[in-house]
Amino acid sequence: EIVLTQSPATLSLSPGEKATLSCRASQSVSSFLAWYQQKPGQAPRLLIYDASNRAAGIPARFSGSGSGTDFTLTISSLEPEDFAVYYCQQRSNWPPFTFGPGTKVDIK
Amino acid sequence: EVQLVESGGVVVQPGGSLRLSCAASGFTFDDYAMHWVRQAPGKGLEWVSLISWDGGSTYYAGSAKGRFTISRDNSKKSLYLQMNSLRTEDTALYYCAKDKGGRPPDYYMDVWGKGTTVTVSS
Image (cartoon, rainbow over all chains, first blue to last red; front, side):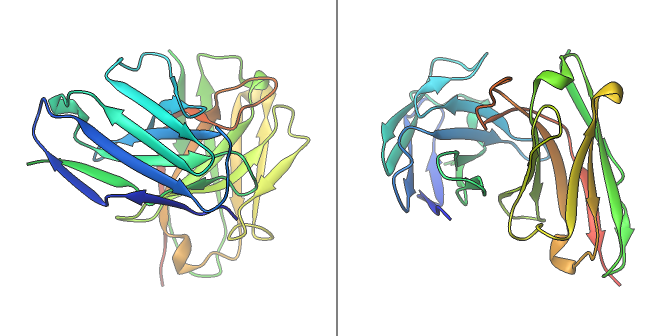
């Protein structure tokens, strides 16, 4: 089973700042990695798939990069609605599909 | 509007059984594989099961294998999760989610329901 590790666990930033979130896989997942956003009391929302492709309707301030075992989600300038928990998910080696433990982006 | 609505979550005793349902609308249901994903209170996301567009292939997480059965009825645009031998650690919010890829699937989840809560407790 591929284990995904996310860092940091919590990221405290102010609106307008840049957020950089990391996801590391226990073995290569090629580019088969997605990022999801989850706000309190809501279902997750797909942001990025195949490491760097934005899902439909996702603003351009969200970008993804990486391949192999190291991936990054970047939010170029945080909007108030971006404060949430972010999860990565791999679909390279399954079952199971696995998620990382999440990074919480909160307001500084 | 593309929508998924889960139902069937209740409080059940350890060892009990439960069937969750997910009603789909706004898309061609039988073109897409479907997933169940759960989230224990205050915890992260855990993939539970996947079913192919035609129901012919099913896959499970280790925690679900042998106890849970995923199925679908394309004529009713519905997805199901039969859960047997429930344990306290199965307590979670259960989401159904649509696979983004269609035929073939790409195993990312682009539409999610709001979830239904299963509580396993004596």
